[in-house]
Length: 126
Image (cartoon, rainbow, N blue to C red):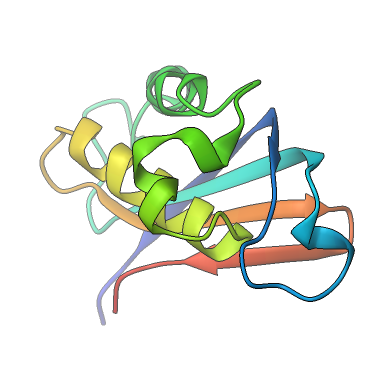
């Protein structure tokens, strides 16, 4: 039996966007206070019996979210070619964060982006 430990951190960011090609209110410029949840996993704990230090992953997540916070997402290079849906925002955060995680044995399991308290999108690799 393989063991798997996981931790989650979350952090907010605020930004504006509009959905291209959408028929409805969301095609117009509007904003959200997104909540981002990140889950990391490891089969083995580090020498302190942790997947990793919460403060380290929060610091890395803050650096990624700084690229999005208080921006018009459609104007950012990634979202000029990708519609800034919650799904694509989660994907963007996932790959940016994955590059930042250098610790051996730690796997980025998923990124979940909450657009509202009742609506979220998740991105992970299979």
